[in-house]
Image (cartoon, rainbow, N blue to C red; front, side, top):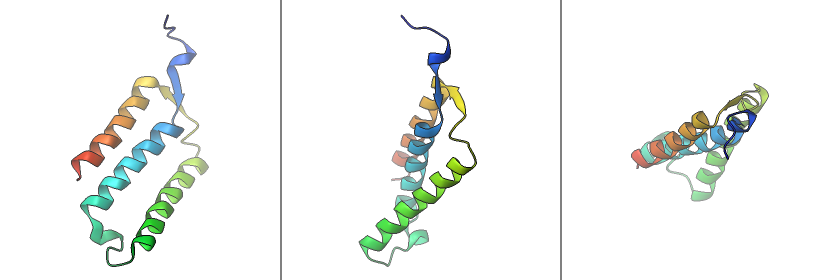
Length: 89
């Protein structure tokens, strides 16, 4: 049985992480010239992981990840990140 109380709220940490991964992945695929395309694969991977780390650190330090949102908003963030990534290919 579904209870419509506190169980229906998520912290934004995982939905925001998946949203950021989808958006940055889509941007990396659509606009590779912005992100050091003429370098080696290793350097491009380090830059991508570094960018994800910087964005995630900013979200952690600003306490955005600690906010609680309804489960529907979390799912919308996750699916919009996936949709953005698939549309940018």
